Image: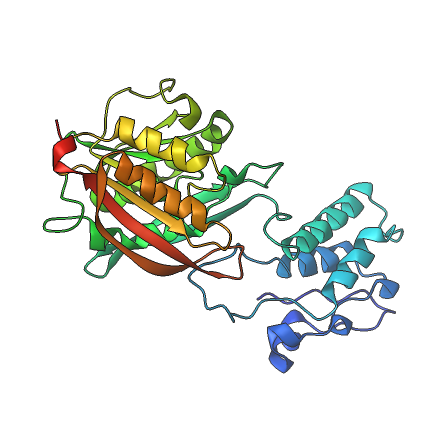
Length: 343
């Protein structure tokens, strides 16, 4: 990490960032090691410091105890910068930038809901030791737009795809022209990962307010994915109204689609309508095992079975998420039509 510039003469010398890191672990740095406002640190000193204190986007691959630049008492230090008039800085634009940077560093330490826009990369296995990367942009969360956040079940299911898809596996290899439909795509991680792992044409769908960011992520990854990807709007409550083709699909995908009493019925209604009624058709699902949602999970199973589908494989797995204490257990399952329901 580059050293922080020293403040001007007649002020106490401030240790460079490198010197601080040599004498202490990142998690043990004291606020007193940082430039104090009474010393009137320069604009360059403060901007360099605040850039160095930036936290990277949460990674679900990094060890949970990975060190971060998070000195003890940093929240109070950042709040002091935000509340300070910074009168020794002559330029209004410089003061505004310092305040903005300090606010950004503070929001990064206040949880996922407070964090601003961010981009991060997810590594998806392809099998035989190979992997691909999917780049996902997540705007800051506003109101109740949960589809603007990447959920752990999508990543967990992505990493399981090489085990599920292919000759002799739970999801038979597709033929040319066959497509998969993803329901509730959100930021698109699962649908993009599916297209990359399988090379299958994939249609990613969500609500109108989610579509723009979903389309952005599909475009950002299009050149690195083998399968052809499309984006459309599909509201489960109005299954007949969509901006995508009205046909059926060889594979239907969904990850973490249940967070209300109404969702099981809406979800299964779309699956029954959109999944091809032929041998080899599959519905691939993963739902996190959250406390308080056992009824919804059981209802999904009941409605799928009542609708003519049966499980061909299921299991439990553990993934990571930004919320819920890190690790999240999930229930994955693969479904197909009962023989009497085939056309």
